[in-house]
Length: 376
Image 1 (cartoon, rainbow, N blue to C red):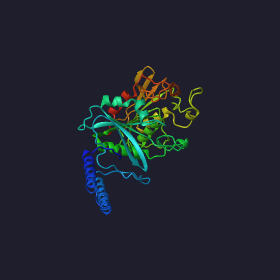
Image 2 (cartoon, rainbow, N blue to C red):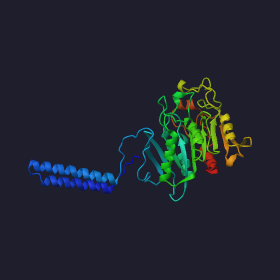
Image 3 (cartoon, rainbow, N blue to C red):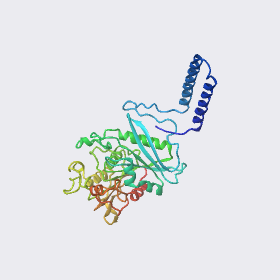
Image 4 (cartoon, rainbow, N blue to C red):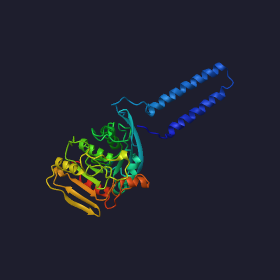
């Protein structure tokens, strides 16, 4: 873990040490060259001793990446800061320097167990795009939960993408990092530094980050209480959660990139060739919802639970262990975070992704959903 901290006692130690060194030089300025050389050697040895003492007092990273498969443990307190705000953290995992950002909500109380939400950015995105697009920090401050924004690594083609499952159909877009291990380590560190309610840890993400959220549901259901996906696909069909896990999925029916029926990008859509969906590659969203309803042993058909304007939510209830599977569609919605913002400014980007709906707030619906489904 990398920290840059001002320590007054250390700086005072070095200040007085240097003043003393200059005093020695002034005192012996007129001595012979041999005496000067002897004094210089003494000063160098003293400096080395100071370094040894200080390095033992305040451990620092050696800056050398470990071999693949080895995770560098953090030393000391991971989070010396407890005030509300944003804190950027880095560590080395599996030989790669990884990054994440923690938003601590207004009014955080270290004596109160606090829920946590992982928020995963989309393909090619950054932490900042997840912050801006989801506007989740505002919801975090209003509702009192910690939100963590991790940063993805790279895919085979060099783009920033999550390793969201074995992608045999678009292998160039396969993420290359151990993201399940990375996210587990992120949770370890945040739980070590803050009073996190371990029964109320949730995950969400959009697009490629939404697909990674599906993988989290499949691989981390023993630790993640519930998930919410925005415009993402389930990659592959090798999904076996450790327990029934509640799922909430938001999707714009006019999404030209991650199409609802997994078909091709509509003809005439102003989407660059590289970003077009060829269709026929992934599981259509309705089938994914049915797949999870079956995994959770839901015994009833989906019923409407929310409707406003173009937004409609339907829910499979009466599921094992009080789990729930809900799909919220926006009939004119694009590849956007409902109730959020466009992470990139400019008419060109907005024309590509389509309409951003305000008929439903993904954050509000998501948080109410999460509150109903703690880890059991």
